[in-house]
Image (cartoon, rainbow, N blue to C red; front, side, top):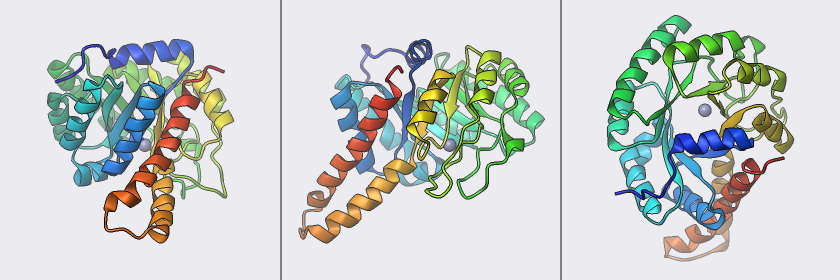
Amino acid sequence: MTNSNLLPLRQIFSTYQTQQKALPSFNIDSFEIFQSIVIAVRQTNLPCLVQLTAGEDKYFQAENLYLLVQKARLEGLPIYLNMDHSKDPTRLLSLVKLGFDMVHLDNSLLDYNQNLTLTQQFISQAKSINPNLLVEVEFNHINLINDQPNPNSYTAPSQAQEFILTTRADLLAVSIGNLHGVSFDYPEKLDLDLLSQIHQKIPETFLVLHGGSGISSDQISLAIKQGIVKININTDLRLQFKKSIKKYFSQINSERIYDYLNPLVSDISQVARQKLIQFSQHV
Ligand SMILES: [Zn+2]
């Protein structure tokens, strides 16, 4: 059950890399956030990924998201599936069998050499199930916004080259000053020169920017120019959800739950639409 007119994800990433554009990868916390993404993709006809962290998977269940995505694809909407930051290879292999387009194996808390060996093993196993699968890897742990950025944890270009050559991974999550979450007091500052060095070492690899929420649009544009082709967006959707749900529950009095959720979905879809347009604009 899928639409064969959809381009393979690898082809979209390659085209975007050449055209200096990036795909947003939206985390799906709830059905309403998924609905918002569908509306934004329908309005723009621009491709994106939807993804789940382990916590989101536990609540939402990736199998449910898979079915919702198949339904959207029947409509021709270019929405692709990823599992985000998974430390559980067994869970990932079951999602690869189910039909996920890509998975992110995050062994960044392990020792570098152990990570290298386990990631290499996982990729050969996963690609024997689906040779078209894309795999994202990570060896520099990307911290939360409350931690101060630590240049010692930034991605070293030579190590990136070794990790990609050994594991044959398709995407690399880089650590260049990006943090998970949004801080209004200390906006993130990306090391774009380092990003450019990483891109030069592994020009074929699709580079991923985690913690895309809260980074200025100027920095995002420059990062896309230096090789970023996937930008993860979670907090911006969650913040809009919290803001809108408070607003509509205080303004509306109804027994029909969708009376609150319809305007909320519309608000979140505006956030998603803005990201889709911004990341796909060649500047
Ligand atoms: Zn992340």
